[in-house]
Amino acid sequence: MIEAASTVARLRAATASDHDAVDAGFGRYDLNDADDYRAFLLAHARALPAVEAWLDGIPGLAAVRSRSEALAADLAALGEEMPTPMAFDLAPSEAAGWGAMYVVEGSRLGGIMLSRSVPDDMPSAYLGAKHLSGEWRALLAAIDRQPADEAWVADAVAGAKAAFALYRRAPEA
View 1 (tube, one colour):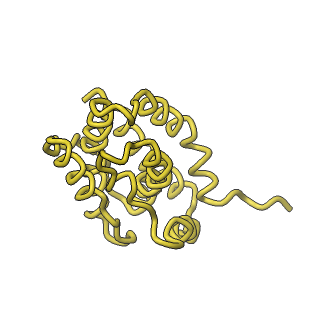
View 2 (cartoon, rainbow, N blue to C red):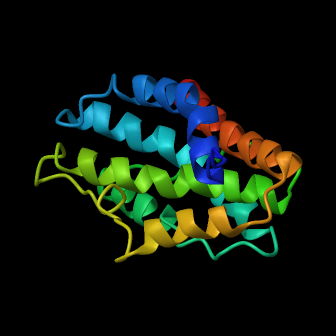
């Protein structure tokens, strides 16, 4: 008997091209260059607070450990204010919330890798906001514990895709 793919595996597979598109869009920034780094952070600041605020309004989800304050502090150190967040217009549901959280928390992993490219004289609290010990694995396990029928998985994928789409549009906003 072939075992069904985990919910996380299905989520990852269904959003791989979305993830690649976001990586490609943000990959154009040279984080060693102060202007590019500022633009990179401003783009994130248009997306992250919107998704975090949306997630805060969904009961039943694990609490989001916000990175918006670290992002605001980094921007302030570069002489910038937080921009107005973009609209995250997705009907709230617990499944969509888990999908969006998968994207937001997954971006911490990439942030740690990217933080190594930021010169020491530039602020990097946002990119350096890594997961607590075991936090990422616990999130993936929590997603896999959800009673995920086909409709639930479809909603989770929709939440993840919406979060990726917001990040993809953020540099152009």
